[in-house]
Every structure is written in C-alpha cells, then in structure tokens.
Amino acid sequence: MVPRRRIGPVLAWALGLGPLVFLLGSGASLAPLRGAVRPVDRVTSLVGAGSGLVGMALLAEAFVLSSRVRWLEGVFGGLDGMYRTHHRLGVAAFGLLVLHPVALAFRFVPAEWGRAVAFVLPGHPRWAVDFGVYAGWGLGLLMVLTLTSWLSYDRWKLSHKALGLILVAGAVHMWGVEDTRGRRVIMAARPGLWWYMTGLVGMGLVGAVYKTIVHPLWPKPRYTVSAVERRTDDVIEVTLVPQGAPIEGEPGQFVFVSVTGEGLSREAHPYTLCGPPDTDAVTVMVKALGDYTRRLYERLEPGMEATLDGPYGRFDYRDGGDRQIWIAGGVGVAPFLSWARTLDPDDAAAPDVEFYYCVHDRSDAVYRDEFEALGHLWPSMDVALVCSAEEGHLHARDLGDVTDADIFMCGPNRLTQDLRRQLRARGVPDARIHFEDFEFR
View 1 (cartoon, rainbow, N blue to C red):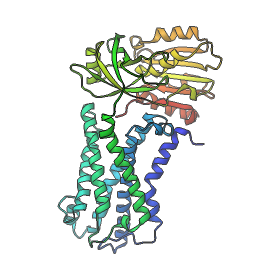
View 2: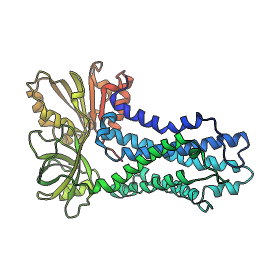
View 3: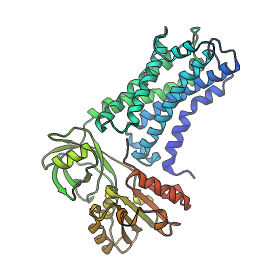
View 4: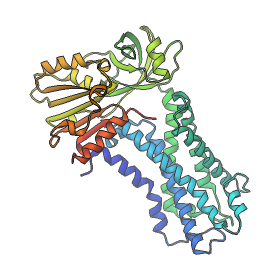
C-alpha cells in the first residue's frame, strides 16, 4: 500500500508524463517538421515534442506546489513534502526544456551546423519561436541562481519569483508556435493534448499569480513580540501575542514569521510552534544560522511587530503507533518539545517514546533539562543525549530494536537522510519513517 504522503508525488509525476500518452497513442505523424524524412529526424522530432510538453507540464505543476495550498499537504506529507516535489519537478523540467530545442535543432546536423546553433538563439522570423528561446535561456539563468548557495536568501526568493515570467513565455510559445511551413504543431493537431496541456499550464499560471501577487497582499494575523529569551549564544526563544484573532495550530506545526524592525528585512522564515497549546501566545525558537537569523538574534526586542502565515505541516506523533523513536538534531528539537509539552503523562494512550537529542556538544542541548524533567514525570519516555563531539554521530544501529517502532526525525537534512537510508537498510518500511525538512531552498 502506498503511504498517504507518497500519493502526491506519484500523482504529480504521472500528470507530468501525461503528454506522452497523447503523443505515443496517436496515429498522426510524429515528424511534421520540414526535412524530417530521415528516421533519426522522426525520432528527434518526437523527443523534441515530448521533452517540451512534459517539461512545460512539470514546470506548471511546480508552480502549483509552490503556492502553499494547504489542502494538498495531506497527500505530500506536509508543506516540506510539497516543496521537495516542487524542487524535483523544477529540476526535471529544466533538463527537458533544455533538451527540447537541442533535439529539434538536430535535424540540421551535420549538413548545417550554423543553422543548428542559430535555432537555439533569438532572431527567428516567427515571434512564438523567439518566446520559447527567451523562456529557455531565462530558465537556465534562474535555475543556476536557484541551485547556487552564494546568493542571499531574500535575493534568491526574488529571483525565484521571476520564474513566473518564464512560465508565461513558455505558454505563449506552446500555444502560438507553428512549424517551418506554417502548419499547426503536434499539440494543436491533437484536441485532447491541447486541452490537457492548457489545463495544466493554466493551473500553473494561477499558482504563479497567487504566490507572487495575491498571497503577499492577503491579510495575515499580526502579532507583537512580548518576550525574547536568549538561551545560548546563538539560540533565542521568542514569545508573540496576537493583536487580533490568534492562529489555531496543532503541536508540531510551523508558521512563516516576518518581523518588522530596524535593520531587519521583511523576509519570512519558517519556525515551529513549540509553546504550550493552551494559550493564544505563539512561542518559536530561532537559531542564528545565517545573515538574517543572526540579525534577528541581535536585534529582536519586545514590542516589535510580526506577521504570521500558517500554520503548516503534517508532522504529527499521533500518526504513529504505541512505540515511537523521536530523533532531534539541533533546533530540530522544536516539534518534539511542542509534543512533549502537550502530552499528558497520565494518559494511557500516550505512546512509549525513546527520545534521542542530537547536538554537537552539551552546551547546544538547550532543552535538555526540560526533557529530562519530562522523562521523570512521564515513565514511558526515555531521554538520551547524543553529543557528536564526544561519541560521534547517531547511527541506526544505535537505536536497538526498530522492528515495531515508528521513527520521527527532524533536524539537518544530512542527519535525517543518512538515518533514513540506514533505517531502510535495517528493513524499516518508509511508512514508519516520518521526517520534516526545513531546508526549503
């Protein structure tokens, strides 16, 4: 049985590959381009058409998934699962949309190399073809920026928004392009394919407009910073109180927080709700990991205002069974802290928990005392501190018997992915491995 969180990715890839069903299932010519008389021309024509259509379908879906539509979270395992699929669809779309003009230009090889090179450059007599060229080169530039780490987070987000223009240019190319004889291209010659692609690309355009224009302007709950507690040299715990109606979040969910203050940009970052659930106040933990969070650590003060977007996330211990293993890496402790503060030690339905708190050294274990106190109050919780500087990193073999346990992990991507591979090697099925990934970029 496919886990519920895997339904979304499987469906997304199936929809993206849908154009191939129309292409391969049609008896019409697959090589409408002039000069496509060699067998290789027919193959490259099919590859060019297929890669362009599938690439556009995947790119359109990527925009839908980036729009933070909450009702989709369930079939992707949360917003982090949606973003992971968004990233993979985008990378695949980039590769296919690069292949699209290269395959079509191959019909001029080897007789007309100059014409083949000119084919992938602007300056075509047909405006719709030039729109495709601009979309391809623009996508290449923005993809390079997306995959680089030297660009600051706020500038990266700004460049990412420009991808909407790429989708528009690609759509104009897809709907308006004609072949070298002025005939309709493959998509226009097949009504079913035309409607299929128009529907997908239309949803992508709606997603792009919503994410870029509507969502930033949509009113969001406003909060005021009421307390800032500096837990360590790089970790603060921030309490915010609502100015109006509070958000209603479940333990372990997260919100995007944007703070208004001197020297702070308005960029929004995700933080897990880690306070007690019986209050309207919101408590989040912030670690100074980059330029923005370092400034937040240094300059955040009570009285500053913030807007919250959310809550998001489907990382929930209630999806697990009676025996659970919780693994937190650094500030990935936040959702577990939220769960532990929520659980009733006297509740007979509470799961048996083995909690592994993974840090570099003991000074990083900000909430160690609180978890150990909870462990004394809650007989079914065992707490273990894992300091990599003293005993190395946690491995799946250190977890003991995992045959009947649900494993919940949150922390740096390298920690969760390494443990996920090791747990699979030990025979733990994906359905019992739950993790949340905040490395959205």
